[in-house]
Length: 579
Image 1 (cartoon, rainbow, N blue to C red):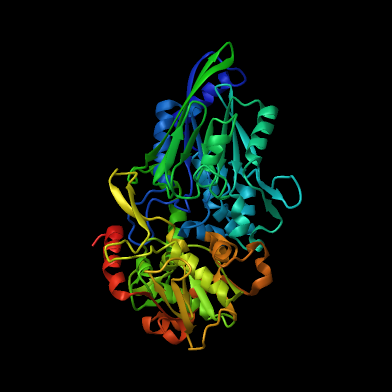
Image 2 (cartoon, helix red, strand yellow; image 1 turned 135 degrees about the vertical axis):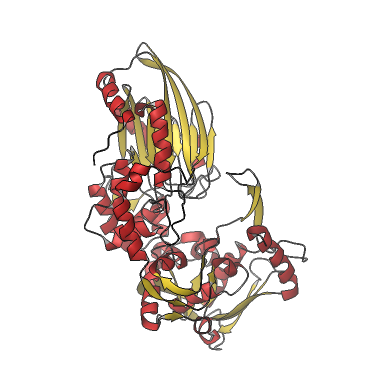
């Protein structure tokens, strides 16, 4: 791909005279990071053409920095989860599988220096990420993903960038918890190893081999709390313990964060191109050697309306292909679906997911959660684009055998993530807290835990008593057909591959099930849930609330006591979403 820009020409001329030696002086490098882009490649939505943050607005911002600061002073890194979550990613993952992947072409256009493999990138499956391994010219990094049973990295482990004669090493790591979320078929032949102490060992290896002047660790792991209790969130743990590292770039939890001290800095830019991470390293060189460094870190909001017009034009035909595909009619919806309704009790949105799951002949019970915090689909004609709102991820459906006690304990764990013990109507029934908005500085209310782990059950009749604590809240009366529910009974339960593999901790921490041996419980596998929805629409044509809300199929549940719940729930929902 040919791209001519003034900063690029000047960078080539400068690098021709600067490569190979370090001149004395002061140098400032800006480390720009993105993460959890989730397919947000295009600046316009596919339905109403509204503008949104995207790689095109990131490109505008980065190009302005390159123009002002010089290309040799900018390093651009993505920390993973780039291949799933939006129509464009889906289209080039599974529909157009013959052309060079759009993300490969965009990262090349934007001159990324490195991209890290995220867990949702692995979730796309071997055909997709192996294709990226081959056709991406930008290094695709995961130093802790090995060919199974070996010490040979499956992806590239690190890359070295030369700027002003200085060597900048970027070492990439994916999330080690992948085996607890994803079906083994998606990562067959791979082995994922925990980050610490592996990261330090890899840093030492690269420092000994390459003698870099600056070291950046880019890992698809959440910021975390600085301890090792959560294997998927070890950003701060690395920040607090690593030596010989200048920058830690983390990701995964979608929560913007930055910090720095005298020797190391950390950045998490959030998600979906809303922000970029900005790390600044000032380096002083004397007699050909670095004599001092200073570091700073920040998270910078991206202005969605400032778009790289050249990039927009270059990829316009790709956008039109995606838009045409996702605007094809697929059926009708008789009632508006709102994911927020799932927080207060039974909802049409989750009724639909439970209905799809319970349509599998082996399934007696279904577990499901809202996958978007505040998504909605209007009633009327549905197009394929709406299916991404209803079900944004490529999760497969599993049917597993569980005991009645495990089911009850699972639900107790789920509702404990979601609900407080309430003693009066003035208490918060929902587990929410207020925090400053990263853009406005004003406080906003959010759930303490992730809503996509708030599972409810279909196929059961039960209540959840908000005046009781964990372990005593959930009272299961029967199956949907009136059959008595027995804690010592055995039942087939439908759930996502993410949940069956340990995602959210409900299986391990709630039901006490070892998800490393989950295959021993599997009764059936089914395709991606979005595909089940598409097949449902092809068969029936319409999503009718009367059909998907049939209590003889999906059962019934509610929060009790109703008087205590109603006032508190109304107030909490208003805090979260406004009137």
